[in-house]
Image (cartoon, rainbow over the protein chains, first blue to last red):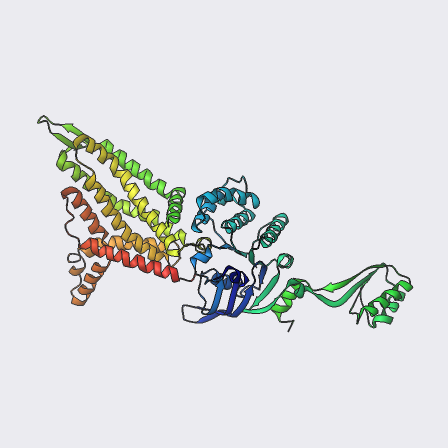
Length: 314
Length: 269
């Protein structure tokens, strides 16, 4: 296929993906109930969902660790089981186990060799990556690593083959705030370099900060797909904070807003238009009372997520 | 596959399994060195002594001693090696590790086969460490060559390979090392009884149907005990005494390994 066409094709595309697990008594347990999603190249894509939503199953299918019952999945214009395409993918699993005795360099060398990275490249790339993830100079074996250090090593392993597509399962799990910031910066850098990142995380604030697109998976289905801005856009309400509240202030506000929702010295209301908001500010200034701030009320991704999974947004 | 093979060898060394086996092999070699001596008798002939006991002229005694060594390694050693090598297969399929290795750009079967061959290498290497130093010493002193012993070691390793293929198949269950070890040990214990089924099972079973079943079980299953006998016979007399255990075990290994690799490629992990 022509390179230009390949670059316009999505990095990941699934259509009506179903997965049912069979118990020993041949009972079917559905994990995915028709997941269709599209991850554009050069973007950071966030996968969210409560426990049991089917996130791990979806990742396993994408990585060729298990087959779907029906539907299709394509990664970088190929099927997930294709070993050639897997050489262009980096993956950081959530629960990885590195043999206790293994040190960082031999581990990365083995991962690199399994991905067909030439030894000459590994010689230069391994020290670079270890520096990048903050493990340069660490000589101890994996059994002496903290959770955060293991996570950093796993991240280095995922980046070893300079992948076009990076699939990260809880990459900031176990990292301190500084480590999380480093990972965020790293992801932004990779995106700037044209890489596609598929991020599965429970850290909603992280997802909100870095992702271009977010999918919420619930009960094996895509419940919502949007940008973080769409998820967190304003509710239409405002918070007006004044220096002091008195009956006069309350009365002045009520004359514009009607029944007013005061919490201490903060008024929460939904202006019909900008004119009504300005009228409120004028009334309050006329009391007189000092206005400390006026800010729109926004949904956090967490609030939106909770609404979706509890069905409150229906 | 070579990367997985080398990783598995390193794992065996780092987990001390290989070191314990090699340590025992060195001890075995030292004991042999200590007890086996060569003396020239008044007739001018070189005679091999095991401690104070003469074993006979070198041309007869060296192969006889070596075939006895192979008997020891073919029984006790094989058991030890199963305990040391099977965990290499199991750890290759451990949860948390497969997510790292089997998502890479290499076929799953190549990784498992790499681990399988590392187990065989471990076994063959420890046999060599245990027996070759004495054999080379005797070769230098008496002129009795080491080629039959090397072929004997290869035959022994082939017997071990058949048990490892069973362990590889059982390791697909991913329930830990106990099941694959138990199956390999069970078949190794069962093999000599099946080989002598006329004297063992048939003394208890009179039904032709059941005797037929046992005959088929014997034909299908690997024959490590007969391979060990073939190995000792080859060292002593230069002949294996029949090819039946070889080709039936060969078919078993190829079919079972093929099936294991096929299932692994299709297995949901």
